[in-house]
Image (cartoon, rainbow, N blue to C red; front, side, top):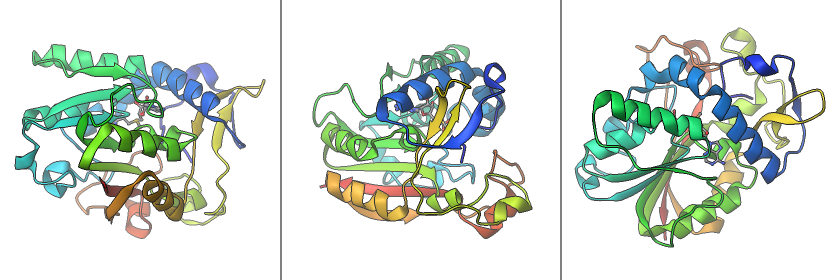
Length: 279
Ligand SMILES: C[S@@+](CC[C@H](N)C(=O)[O-])C[C@H]1O[C@@H](n2cnc3c(N)ncnc32)[C@H](O)[C@@H]1O
């Protein structure tokens, strides 16, 4: 399983394996991988993401249409934490609706792209924070909403802890909405073509996907949870599940994003969006 689509030139010889990866190793690998690859990621996907568009997934579902954070008109004045924000495109959309976003990411280079976009547009800087989502550097009940479009959750070893952290920094009644690779995709090879339609691995195998060098040092890690695991982590942290959105591939969308393609999108879900609320 991999969310990244750009070859890492420095680490061409890295081997993809399934093996355990603890929290420290996962965080270090993510920080270094995204620092090295932020430029390519923004080059490759920046046009699709849009500088101030809030899109949840490669299927192109926009918050403007889906309103998973609640009615757009009600966002004005709300404090919103975007987790794994990358270049903060979603935060910029939220700021445009009158919300007060903070964009958090583990990668300094990703956050520099947020600055670059703000400077190119000549608009107010989106506040950014470099931190690991599993240890949020905010006081309890600091935010009205939290969101994440494929940020942090797929890369964190201890997502039960991450959910508890988001719960802690949210005010009662606040929504936590995040998108991840649909868990069923872990049973399939990660190819956009027909070979990606054959189940070749166990959906139930939670062993992380790791790319590592010849010494065994991880350069990239993703973690798998089944749908049931995610629900249990959310409920255990104190969230109520309001909806589980599985965006369908729109007929108008012809582009591919790594293993996400029109062909696969017609057959199996590619994204799961969890819409939850703090009790
Ligand atoms: C696939 S990108 C998504 C970025 C952005 N949300 C978007 O849609 O373009 C994943 C992001 O999560 C960040 N990330 C990975 N692990 C993280 C962690 N433990 N804490 C915070 N951010 C993390 C990466 O640095 C990267 O910017």
